[in-house]
Image 1 (cartoon, helix red, strand yellow):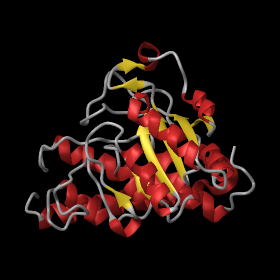
Image 2 (cartoon, rainbow, N blue to C red; image 1 turned 135 degrees about the vertical axis):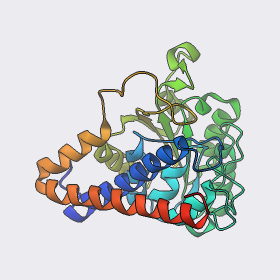
Image 3 (cartoon, rainbow, N blue to C red; image 1 turned 90 degrees about the vertical axis):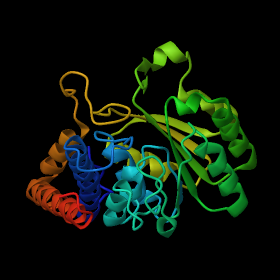
Length: 289
């Protein structure tokens, strides 16, 4: 349920960010499948859009240490979609000079630091940055990265030093194809034992906003967000039929129930059209259409 504390402008802004991420990546999937871009590994977050979109509403100006799955983080926090397209096309006008691709997105303008490709290393680096600068920092990781020893050690050190950092675990219950209950017998909420504020929630955008606000002034903190990704770990494939659970549709329905269905439809359609047009423009300039 949408909390009363979020006004109409805020509701629609969150949905606009969700649509931006979703239609950017759906177009990327279509273009990748059509062979119109370099066959680099790509890491999509279709189905997980609410996480970055919601947190960006609360932590504006935070320093960002993303993982390899970073398109949504970049877009939600204000990165230029044109520069991200150029990056994915390997162009020097890309946000990382065309050298980072999908996995190593960086953008000094929004204080987003590129990922080095080693699972979970953004966490200790982010902790060091938060301690060294004193700036509010967010580091994103998957549920498998959260199991790495240096990640656990970094979280404990952040608790000891009272680092101004928010750890965000995007938990889809899988390490590629290995289920979480096969890999470990503990939950992320157990990190409370480090002396760090911790909460396990769903990817309901309104719940993310409530939790993000609650933790904002008591960092360090950790939010484990149960989510569902529609596509493979890497690439554009899908096993079987789409999951019946669809956070995008649920969120859109909630907005409609709040009396903003027409506005939401308009935002979605405008974003769908504008993002497709932007992709086509950049592909033509790159000589790929």
